[in-house]
Length: 512
Image (tube, rainbow, N blue to C red; front, side):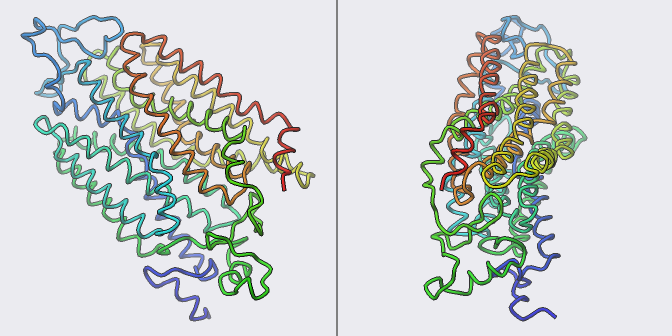
């Protein structure tokens, strides 16, 4: 029979002292809640292409396009920006006319860029807020933001186009808060922590298909207001499911129910405990899952290391390019689509590709675990650490290659390029963070992890402001702008290549 103290975990909004107080069933429930919420809400904004298609259909920002009398009956459209040609006919959608022009596409791209930049720009604030204020505060705040976001989207129309700003930003910021909060759920199963974190890192990509699902419902005859209100009601459930989540944080230790964590939470180090208490109030396991006694390596040494600099460069180029693919997708397919039906078909394929990411989400973590077990076999000490880090070279190279191929598809205006680009998307959208986060956990001290995740997210978001200038560049110099991206992706391969230097890895991984 469970002791009374163990029964505490079953009470809503209580903080269990250790994992021992959470039954296995309760831990699985919390993990399932986290996976479902991450898959639904955490990366919705990255399905921007589908949302833009709906907004164009509704005539949002169509006032930015000159009317027929100004254009002599012709409509200059984004599909022809690089060749400065005009189309004589507008695409028709049902009984309505879908109009498009460069100015309209620029406004959509600006809003999408701002929303995506704000996705992780507050990463440091979210991380520290989660640490000090806890899961309940973070989750309920995220729920409110996402719900308000969908309400604003429901009110967005041809007459009120600027509400798209509030809707997209709230959905974006709230989604990232859910994603960051769910990272901590990896502590529920310490022995499988990296695998769980890799799944959570990648499964957020599925949520990018939510706008595609909303597009399908809209095209099936449901009103846009109803579809958005349904999503708002669904996101409000996050606040209700919070009653099953430890209100402040997910306890962690060397393993589920470890007595070491229980002793730490019940004893005072000043009275002779051999486990030192951290500033954070939590035990801090290293990359192998062991508990460290002190912060021997300063955070700034990790932040300003060669590995962190190259990782930031690699993550930025790959994640920026994947985001560019989604943001430019609608404009790209309009270049060669014969009519609106064909464009809508490609737009739905984009959403389906994001759904298919569910089948590749766990793949990076599984591959890393398999290679790691093989590389470190028979090794101990620093050589084992080097082997673990080097096991990530191949997965990172695969991601670099597939992202490069994906962006290169923009050089071509054909259906086969769409199919190839979406196939690459299925592999690399969950793979960028699915490989990058485990690398960060293995390469650097574990007690630096949460802070470095926040710093990394904020830096990448600030750099992502380059998306809009890049978009305007493509209007006048399309091929050089895309070619520059391909060149940067090639340079980012320096990150996985630097891991071949065993001498460097031995030195940095063997630091006291």
